[in-house]
Length: 190
Image 1 (spheres, rainbow, N blue to C red):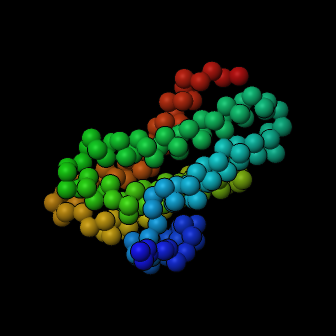
Image 2: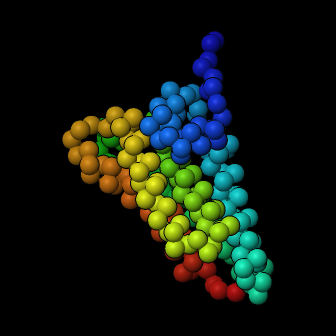
């Protein structure tokens, strides 16, 4: 059996996609990465990094307690972890069958993981540079740009194309934020 092996790691494919979205999406599309590999070698380590990065708040605010930071770390991790699976679940509910089929392919799942990874990376930048928060608050716009540039490689049907891009953008950018807000509201403040 001659299996196609990826020429690059998911992380290097991700970096290329961030730097040059069009060429990066072409490389990711032609690559042979399984979504499980992208998740385990890129997405999960990044969300573990931002969960640990919550403890960087001690640099700027040494009065915070470990309990508060641990709560923030858990909420952050859960938000992005469940964000991916909730996006997949909502795709099944919201999109028509022809669009759903395209989004549930290996490339479709990698598309979601790569875009969510960009959100995670920007969140980590905010953690290490909280004073740059007023500038970094606009980084989801770059994720939106990545979604728009990459969606053409999904080859979605032209019928309702813009609505599908809009819904996909709302899901990818909004689900982790929504889950974060929900868990922040229900978890007791220590």
